[in-house]
Length: 297
Image 1: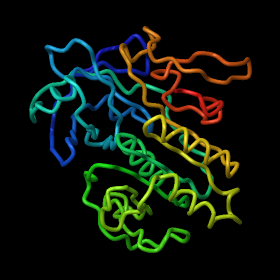
Image 2 (image 1 turned 180 degrees about the vertical axis):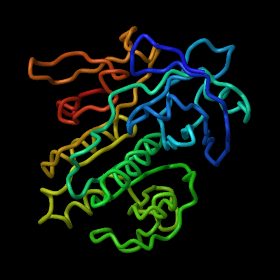
Image 3 (image 1 turned 180 degrees about the horizontal axis):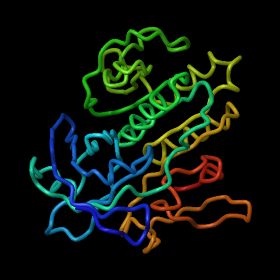
């Protein structure tokens, strides 16, 4: 059931749990029947949801996949604290109240020929959503997706059949979900997972970008993950002089811009201002939020 919200683009919706699966590393994938949210969701949006009726504060969750026709969306999360622990106990058939979709998404068109998508940890879901969007809306554009995790990947990796020039030998592990869509992906970890690049996402990205020296003008970067990773991605974009959009992860209270508890420094034409990650973001131009090496610390 949907009701009008104070912001025209945000629905208040009672979503029904369709599927809820547990994976290694305290990770979960939940599919929710939420037609209004699914219809309006764009890559980079999130939902603000009630994890349990006994816990008053909502939790923000990134949207990973959407099926607009069937009216559902999926999210991947890792338990961390009472809210997500309570959410992990929810069962198919349960109802979860949510606000969504919320936030400024990644750009939705006008992509360069070679988008590079970089996701780390719980920053992986928005990259899956964005990769699928690019594939469906701009079929001639071929994104390359790099994902890193220090816990087992939720989707069991398999050797890729898609050749990616510039990737080090032996780095063959891919995300089956993307591979089946014809989207090239490679995985990184420092946990010695088979076929994964041994290092950080930015190490693999640098190796790939170095091999694209003659095509750098065709590349742009999109990224989501922990702040230290995003800072490193922003530095990488500066190193190769590439445009870069990042989706920030910040603690949120209201999720709709009222409390101003998630503000960050953003460089604007009028100077540095404080903007709210929930509604002014979570997507920003990297150059505007990582003004120097100390930004967002």
